[in-house]
Length: 340
Image 1 (cartoon, one colour):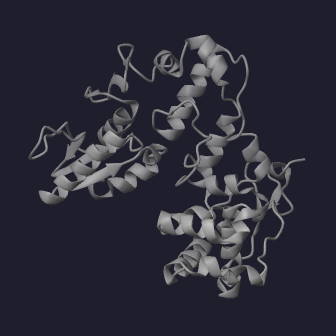
Image 2 (image 1 turned 90 degrees about the vertical axis):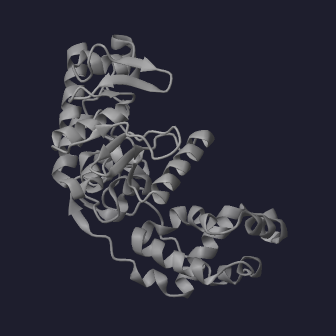
Image 3 (image 1 turned 30 degrees about the vertical axis):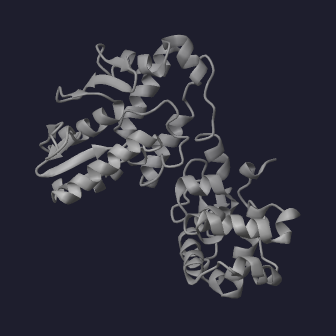
């Protein structure tokens, strides 16, 4: 059995740090009060799972040259992986400072999907991350069989289309093919809505079956009636019509437009910025709305930063929306709370 099959015991051994690990003089050369504050914040936020990503959080607030200098000077780094040394230093220091005393005791709960009891820390970290430390409401075996489920092979065309329609009805968005497996897909959902979604994910088709039946997920969305038949795949997106007949150039843009229309939020498409040859995606009252979907692209990132600077310069309120904000309607409702 794997760590994803247990309900009644911790997924990991109790990790404690050797008291001497936090005396590493090479790390202490660059360690600051801000790093200690970071440890406390991470422990408060992530409780007993705090140390799994502490290395990444430390790197975010530490100049690269300091990390590189430490790795080149510390003799331990020639014997052990530097990231493990850093993690155990953080664990040891947190214990020395008494920060781990704020970690709450994992609770025993009943999973709504299987009706079996489980303890919160029986979930491996990737599943805790999907649910959130303060809403661990399903057990690991059930999540393994839903969010980690690869899908049903050779599902019929009609059942596949019905799955898509049901998925859209539950999520109220145009979902990507892998919806449910993403780290943010279950965030900000009530337990009741999560339960509906997890039950549905047991019926999802394998990607290979969708390709065999429809040619692509895009074609499946059209055949299921989610997209208009005149929708077009383009180089950097999808040309399609929103519910209010606005022309959109990506499924994300259509999701936002449909949200605004469904919630009676009056909006304009592609308003011009006060200077430069730039347009925003939407305008609601005097607020610009931009979907920033390709921030990993260097040129796109620079353009996005320039747009944000223009908004500051001209005192234009900007609502920035990113891919993680489109996983469910509740996040969009928070984004547009001033207009609902």
